[in-house]
Length: 280
Ligand code: PHE
Ligand code: FE
Image (tube, rainbow, N blue to C red; front, side, top):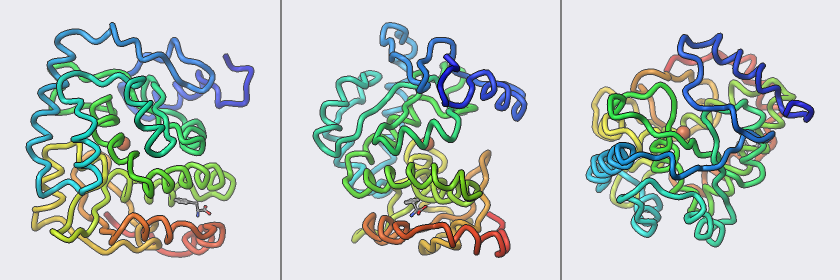
């Protein structure tokens, strides 16, 4: 498995285990060189299907007035509330819409592998779903976060192009020491981004859209800061991984997001290294 130039699997597992007490949640024993697996649909039990339906129903109810238009319209047309979605079934429609494809993965991936998939317009989706006891809290993204949160947005042409550009930019940032900054951009856009729509501010970030607590916090809490998207500011701002965000950034359109992130970041990374980091 390791005779390729992909980062070593053993090395990856060891580095993650060293960073957290629980190691990795997924089953990495059967993956291919590019870290993809089969979505083996028969492994989902009736309990898993039930967890999916409950998660979907709870989240779906919170979307009106909070989720952006692109998300809502893709979600309604996909109609995957009754059962855990099959990636193959969605892929036909996704490819027709934006030429993206979902690939099944065991869980978190090494940065380089993740960027490589995005650069090829392949979105990695985790296959496992949380157990009933983990209903409200999971240690790593599962299929509900990955699918419900991210997949509808892949149907938007501008987000689709932005994500591919992000993947290419990630491969480049690794050479330039820019990963820390680029990770913040992903966090504050793809995971926790807000957009100003005619009816008001709405969420397009998957971390917001897939969380019952964060979706209300992000849009309604007086404690949350909501600022206009500013590329440098975003890249300077640290983020929280185990609590609701303190600050969210609002774009006017996905076109703005794409255009402002299109220029070459090489110089920007050097500038950022001299600027202060901002607290969340
Ligand atoms: N413009 C970035 C670069 O030159 C690439 C990028 C695009 C990164 C979009 C993120 C999002 O590195
Ligand atoms: Fe995510």
